[in-house]
Image (cartoon, rainbow over all chains, first blue to last red; front, side, top):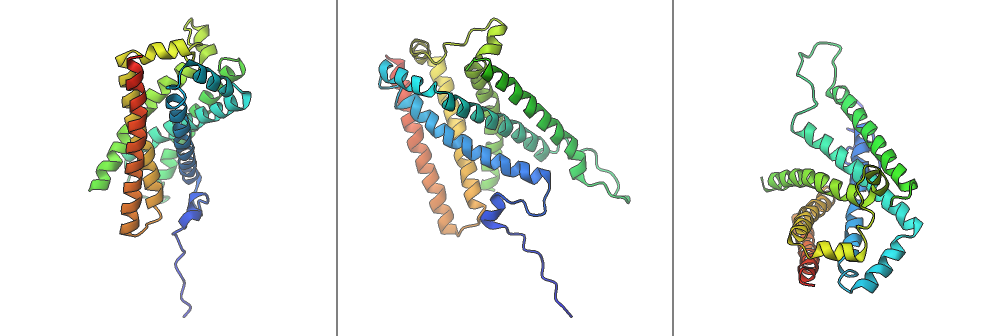
Length: 147
Length: 120
């Protein structure tokens, strides 16, 4: 008899960017990780800027600020804000779900079964909507010249 | 068990950062919208405004508190990503202690500057 090999589920480094057979939530998880690493990189640059350049006095600080007022840096800052908004709101969703909220009440397993993913999906969509609204608000401020 | 505590602290620091960094981001970047409501934050990055805040113990305290939670959350998150590759126990120890050492160096340097600026 032909032996059926179980599907390999250890994706290794490839699993960092490819979600295999999983759905939307797994891609949100990958994006959570990517934004987290991006924010960590920004944090180190930000700490360098606010320590090394700040302690050298007014002239160095103002020269640094004038470089950072370049439109490309401003756009980069906007991307960091978008990453922060996403990482914070998706993180709050994950915390609430880990603590058992937003999961719906348990129901008897009567066919057709309703999986928990579909119960959570509406909250996931609501989170995405809030993220988009906040990104638009910050983008408005960005093009209005507030930055 | 130890990893459960580390993960619980990760969740708590995550909520704290969402609140503190949220306020920081709004204060630093929503100039036009806050200006519409009569709140002027346009000069927050100017030298005199920044150095004035640096002389206040409260701001230095908030900065150091935010630094602690952000460094823990960021570096523990990085450790979790690396350890997901299930390295050997020896590699895990090397990764953990390298990240702890890096965090301590960044913390000491980043705290030295606001404490020095308190007396400028």
